[in-house]
Length: 488
Image (cartoon, rainbow, N blue to C red; front, side, top):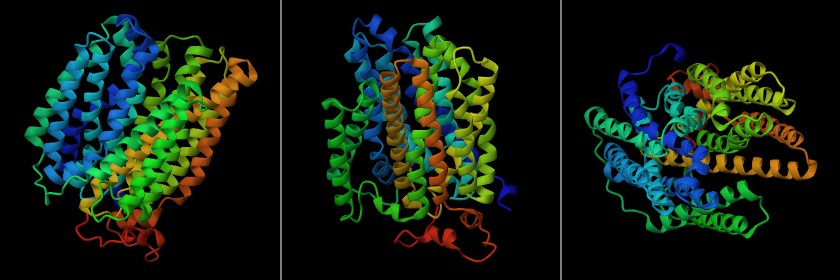
């Protein structure tokens, strides 16, 4: 059975090397968020200006993700990985030595370029190493840094700000990057590109700024609502550019990112659930630290410590979720995970400043278990039945869906909280109402997860025949409009 098979040691070696290098990127995405007030004071600027330290990084990261498909095909995954580590290292050094806000923002842009390449390339290389098999357990490895980042990043940032200079937030990246480069150079298998495709410049000119404009508008919405030109203009421009890219890509045989993968049921359903999960998952990740700081009057560091049980729960369920996905398919695991998330979010709709911290810690532990059960199968299902050359495109699509969905979820949650505060005039009531919305989003995500492939697709992935012959789930593996030769 799929559940008794073991991952190839080559997969574990590849994953270990790549995860070591990616840790700096994942933590850097969240670690700076708790330092904005300190950065504004030390660099003698406003919080509004220094907010671009985070925004510019996320925009650069989002714009660079589409380049990963072409770069991997043109130069090979190993070369791109090594180049990305060097770029991220250079950005970290520049950020740590910044003398004012513009210099720090410039360093963060360079970091974002390196990180935008690394995240999808890591997934592509690990899925290639696994040969497209046991994707649940493979994804449980791939998702480990992404699950730890939002939990441990703010905690690490709080510790650094309490005991060290803010520059250490970037200095700590240097040993990770150097060691990651050495390990990758020594142990990653060389993958010579099979072709030398030209860069789709027109596609890049549509897709990259489209993603950036959408992320910028959502970021502004998170800070001040939706009824402002600084929100609506980039959102409209982003949507127009992305629609234009979709129309343009449909006419090309070699687009920058192959949107025809959306005709492949596992990829389309996985991307859709991953996008919508941003409302249920990332929105609450934005909400919970604020709840602890504003309602329970804790410091940023104490709020990070209070969220540790959620990270522990995620770690506890991650491996089990991977094995169950390989055995029974993504559908049941994901639906169950979202229902657990919903059940563990609901108590916060009643919690107040005097609620027992131990009870809340237990609820967060349960919520973390649900998070692990959601993230792993949804990411894994997107790669079912794909050819080797399609994996890089799927990695980019998954990353884009995850990033935009997370930004949407954060923005929508922030807007709901803002209007709840205005409508009720009471902070605690506003948080209770917003947590009810977050619970509802998780329940809706559970319903949407019913579209995911089920047990038969898992049997096909493990090389087994479906118990009752090929069903729609099994046939979905070849429903891409293209031959499935040379599968990963």
